[in-house]
Length: 140
Ligand SMILES: [Zn+2]
Image (cartoon, rainbow, N blue to C red; front, side):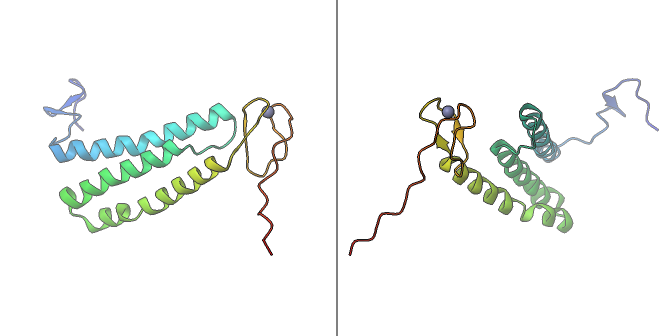
């Protein structure tokens, strides 16, 4: 077992790692990918309910693309490449759904609070929200 006497220098290397540009890229990808858990946890604790903010999906895309670059251009490992080759698809889809939902939120005329598209009343002040737009009657 290596000595931790000169930590973080282990065996003459920072954290005992053989550093290169690609090793730094890989750790950057790990850092971005890991940070999404902190973002999601913080958002959930703040709202006291499970929340997945848009930033979580942006960090997922960024982290997985950096790790995919690391896998393709440095590791050249098919298992590692496959692990990150397709993860961006659900991340982008979740962002599309998130933004569609954000656009559909109803803005309360009384207090400005944003309510879900299906809400009839503002959950902040209780004011009746505008009726959902009815389709125009067809001209005959
Ligand atoms: Zn309101």
